[in-house]
Figure (cartoon, each protein chain N blue to C red):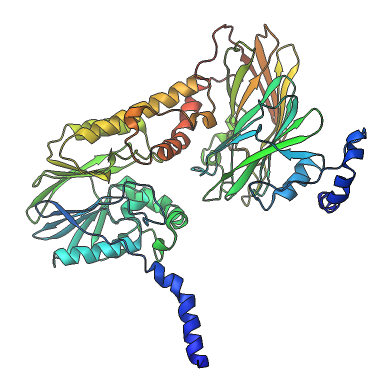
Length: 311
Length: 274
């Protein structure tokens, strides 16, 4: 065996593990859910190095005037794969991107849409400007190499409550809040598809890092009153009924009430982490993990409001 | 380095085990390895627990989330209720720039303390309980974290009137249970800054003591840098029967006084939720 050949074999052996793992690919496949309307369905899970943060239902609508995109995903790679998948469906250009809130999986793929207008509520733009790089850094920690090349890019076009006509679709932009300080829902009045963003979770435990529970419940009431045929939550199953609005309301009401009762009973925050969760919620994905995160988010404020001044 | 000498001489001491058992003087303890494998444990142990006898003991329970959602306020509890004769509790976050979280002297209290801490990176959190015979009983848990909790500026300073409110106390005592144990929960408004942020000097609550009104001291806490902004403590105390109130006295690193009187509700009802 020549030295060169030996070298090549050694190199191949060294490279083998990396090649066996293969390049990181989300394998995004658009699923048609209504006329002109496609969804990339994510895992009903938490961000992991296995799923690369693909836990969201990003979507696009192919209109006569170009493509409208809803959410850009958790990483630059996701956004780029989304672009390629859209291209396989249509040659029409991406005209407009809506980002529903400041959480990482809604906007970190935005670098792939630099040639389109990325729009969001003013509160979302401000939030991403303020917290975006910290949010991206935390995603690097959670999903690692999937994030390569990803930088937080804030949406540039502020939008407000309005109805937008585009290529034969009438899109109603609905400003809400409570899940975060600014939550955009988009109702395609033409197809009856409601993109509820982060306000509705379906069979997946809601996340609360920026939550105001009372405002969130009011947002759910607003969605309940809308006419729609299909509800696309950002996390969880797509359904034709209102069941997941009720499920999200039930969870938030229980969570808030349970933590308030625990503070009132004198429990410490560490004791609250392990409180039992009623059986009706046991079908929700990532239940205990999200519950514990919610204790971290909600407990300090409830406690601050409940403990009397004594000095 | 004394701990290391102790280990090197471990075999010799083992050989003298019988003698040691008969001797009125306890043998210097070998330092058992940390079951969590924390690389800074030996240093932390030596610095904060000294070179006295130490055992890892599951009767001490350390509770903390496995993942820190907010690195500026990670809830932790050290619970040595299953261990008789505890005189002192210590909490240590090994990888913090200032690892020692608190030291609590337990005189009229159940050996239990809970608070919230800043952590700078993923770390083992150790809890140690010293029993009357001088032995440290230790256990711990691992907390993963994004980091930065110790070197993040306190949110307090974003409020222009923060200085007007430093030292304000919120607290409540729950009625004593059938065993005479009354829970105290308290929150002190304070930036509790570590001093690690450039231009912001260390400024934190450093001592707190709880007395039964007109009665004995029940607990005394030396609180250090890692304790969160607006520190929160949960204690289970044994005030003498008939105690009408607890008095809370404390001081921060700039000499600011903390003082409060917390009424003890009279009730035979057991604390719910426990």
